[in-house]
Image (cartoon, rainbow, N blue to C red; front, side, top):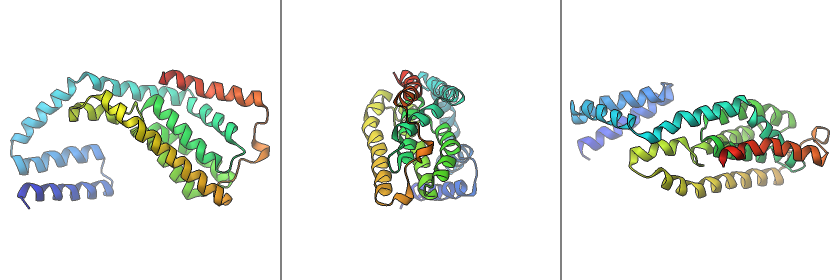
Length: 237
């Protein structure tokens, strides 16, 4: 094993340890890159870091990142995610494990509209977890569904991560989007199948929404679906 390869392994171990200890990831990566880069390349690493930073600042595609984050903030503050959640809940209420499906579908649609992760996980956790616990859902499976669904924003376009990866890797963002559509929806579909199957074979894990909490009027359900889904579909379009 060469010296640089050993240095890379040591950096990986230190990075994992620092993240588990609780250091902020951004500062951890910056400090480790400069420190171990200096050990491996000498003072050249500082020139490389400078030119790489300037080059990234000139990349026009990255201007989309704060705009997507701002759009996610606006949709969250406007309550669109809550309306979308209620719409799917009213539509799927009689099904076993319906709230699992509601969480995954809400997260997938929100990911297509905003491309971010943090807002989805936070809002779903605050909004969905009390309802799921009250309805009698398994706590561990509910937490897994919320966490897994919230992270779909990393993969399903327009993903902010893919926008950042494109210029760094020298790959077209359009090509990254095209290649991520299939895996993103496949992953969401696998989450749905797994959660619904678990609830079907073991109803205690995810019972249907109680009848007294369901919306029974078809017109009311359709109205909630229209007002919950159409605004986000407009953002996607």
